[in-house]
Image (cartoon, rainbow, N blue to C red; front, side):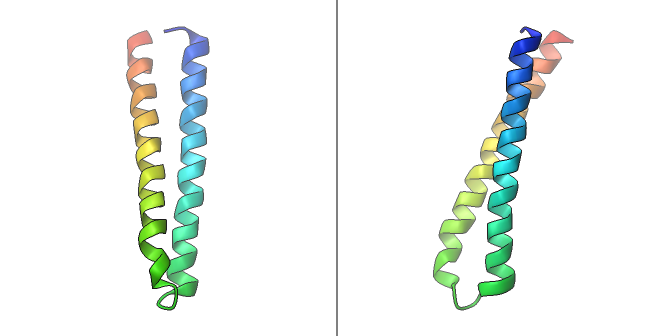
Amino acid sequence: MSDEELKVLEKDVKKAKRIASEAASVLHDLIEDRLPDAYGELMGIAQATYDACKAWDDANKKFLAASKETA
């Protein structure tokens, strides 16, 4: 894998981490500020946070595997 391809994968990891952090922040705000009144939103926000974290994990594993191949 070329250095350019690795940089693209690394950029994908950083973007996925930012999205996951934003989703976690939304979940945190719901828990800290709006529960129990907004409990109806909990499952949707929790699922979105899980999906964002899973996307980060997948991107990170792909990047780490590619990094090992080129090492």
